[in-house]
Length: 278
Ligand SMILES: Nc1ncnc2c1ncn2[C@@H]1O[C@H](COP(=O)(O)OP(=O)(O)OP(=O)(O)O)[C@@H](O)[C@H]1O
Image (cartoon, rainbow, N blue to C red; front, side, top):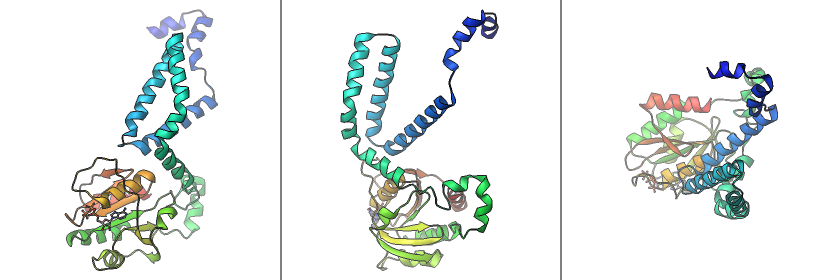
């Protein structure tokens, strides 16, 4: 009905009604970039107290925009000044998050073999010829299963696009191809290398005894201690994947983007990780 009514309106009215839809490619790009920015901000502050501050600011901003559109001069003036002056306050309040964000952007390795370039189908032929060896997920999970059965604690971080060099510096360098026995001997309780996290890049263990940033602000069940908080910390600050084997319960946790990922059984876990690494 509405469409018929609009079609019968004199042409200028009809066009006027849809004037707001007249946007260019740059507007689409603008919206897409704001959406990406908001997604990254959300990813950084999800689960922390900062999310409430962020939502509060977003609501005040929307009200301000509404008051401007409705020409409510006094209120829009007050809210505008509040938002304008609050910019510096925002930088102070979100100091940590801004730091994390810049670190995340700066450490993204767009040229890794598993990274950005791979997304382009045109370059798929190049991939066939390069020396990239995919991560042996089966060996990692088989090792986790064995460690879980003996209640051997472990923390394994799999690097994806974000470079983990900064955290790697806190541990010992290694360059060993993945195999099941290596994991179990590294995390064996009396091994000098068992403490801290292990980093995997492609199909290699590249660091052991790594100390990761611990996520203190997030609320998780009391049975999870520092190992799991460290896994949450690194996956919130980067796109790495984490596997934690609990020394207390023998449970294997899979952590991604600062969240525990649920899985049905060990084969499902393998599939999930393979998918996330693809
Ligand atoms: N910041 C960190 N970075 C890397 N590894 C850590 C960090 N904090 C703790 N760990 C590792 O986790 C181990 C156990 O810590 P904790 O007992 O607090 O963890 P948990 O989450 O309760 O795990 P579990 O269920 O195995 O006890 C430590 O011995 C250490 O190897």
